[in-house]
Image (cartoon, rainbow, N blue to C red; front, side, top):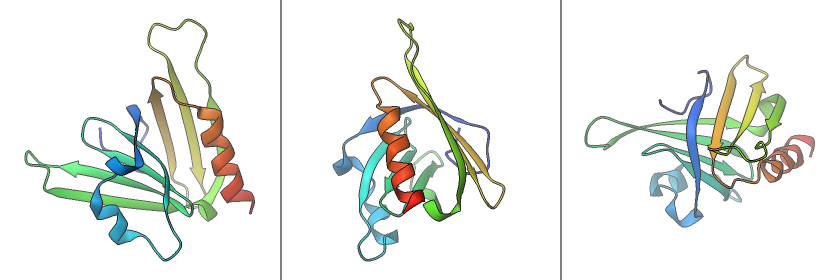
Length: 128
């Protein structure tokens, strides 16, 4: 399932090192913008920068075609987080973001992701 800002959800996002962010993302960034957290499905990526959230949808068999979507933190109207449960077989946490333009994004993170840190990061950028 591609990562977009107007679909129901994205599953199995796993944290990746910032060095693993696709090189094309740097071409989208403005002066003073930098990635602060990154996640990946099998091929798609979700990158949180200090100014916005960027999704990269890798398309086609070869993966040469990519679709980039960007949503600035200034458009975040509301967000909620759901933490991992105790002793879950497959630990996951969720992030729901509602944007002022009517889009809603729901992301499901697998493994050891500090969802609270993501919530604090979004709060810092939204409330500044």
